[in-house]
Image 1 (cartoon, rainbow, N blue to C red):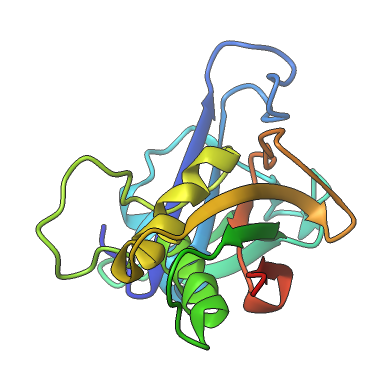
Image 2 (cartoon, rainbow, N blue to C red):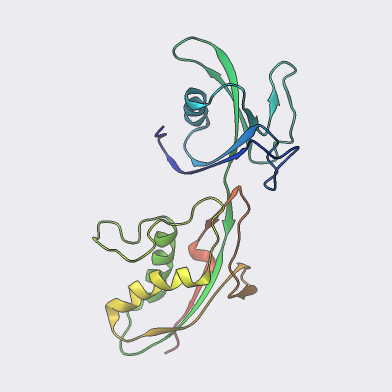
Length: 212
């Protein structure tokens, strides 16, 4: 189902590994992790598609009105009324948690660069992460899918948005590009979010150095 505002969904199913699988999902359960959309719309879409007999993680006992699994800060419980039958149900899922990625990029100036080159690079990195870097362009050969829930962040992915900006202004080039989970701890190691995290980029966390 297409749910307004939803930008990404991950569905994990454990139908064979007792008592829980390597992702922490209990046997005979599915875990739905969602980014975007309203709780009500997501829950109704799940209700209309989910087959009976399969539990939802984190599990909620409707008879005792208590959680079976600790929902944590991103667990969501929504009461749903079937628009067709009027039946009542409770749907549970998880919200994707943003994992802030810090970036540091150094540029070797060759020729003229505009005064706002740093802001342009920051905006391009954010656009790449949100699937809009190549919006409206008939471009192939690049990963244009942004970052999905649980998707690894390799440093090499960030060369594309930076070079897309630099390519407009001649021969300037990247001399260093690192990523990390803080401004003071960066390197070349890929960053692996958990199953319920999604990489996020903020202009305040992107340092751009362009020596004169």
